[in-house]
Length: 120
Image 1 (cartoon, rainbow, N blue to C red):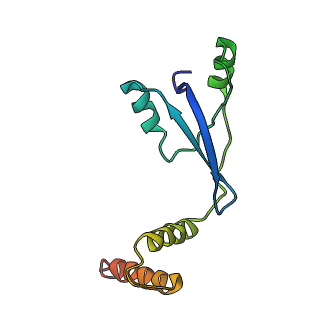
Image 2 (image 1 turned 135 degrees about the vertical axis):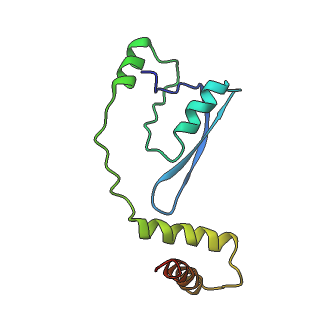
């Protein structure tokens, strides 16, 4: 159960994302360095979130700590993820491209040429 990160928080709300998922926002009091470290280990990891309006009982924490999953990421392919990242980058820094498809083609061609130049 040492992998469980338990931090009291206030749920501030959520935002709907394009892929039909939600981005949840929580506010905490100050956290300890150990809690910050435990959270950092979880960055970009698939985790479970348990929400309850009152503190968890020891029995609840035991159950939560013992949860195992057979989760397999069947979401986006690496190519889809790369395209999504390039799209976000284009939104923030379009480099003069008004059309994303042109920006995407330019960036992908740059990557292709980069890796081709590494070939022997």
